Amino acid sequence: MFSSNKDKGSNTHYDTLISVKTEITGDVKFTGGLHIDGVIKGNLLAEAGSGATVRISDKGRVEGQITAPKIIINGRVIGDVHASEHIELAKKAQVTGDVYYPAMEMVLGAEVNGKLHHQAKGDSRKKPEPVAVVATPEVKVD
Image (tube, rainbow, N blue to C red; front, side, top):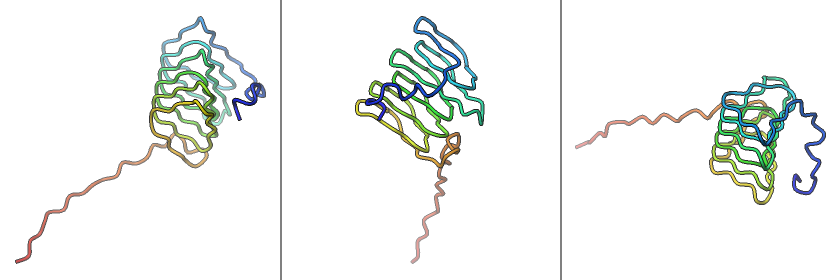
């Protein structure tokens, strides 16, 4: 579990670090590893097929949609989260939005204020189709 192994994300090489003293406004497109200690006000979009990982520390915050193969959250996210491979929600994770995932690890203490949508691997960008309701006229027989 995430909480019992502090170095779980250490197997990933993080190419980019957004420090605690940094705030970015706008969408961020990335490949490789992205570690966030600061604030991003915009969408995080990993390049398709990149095998990218985004990790949000307990100091980090994202206000926007996240789309990546591997997502590790221990901070705050306000927006929908789309993981095409797996998502880990650590002890201090707070997600306000829907989570789309094929595999999930959620530790005691993590919060999701939205819906959880399990999907087939690689299908996380697809949103559920709305159900059409067709009204039929009532027929009276005398």
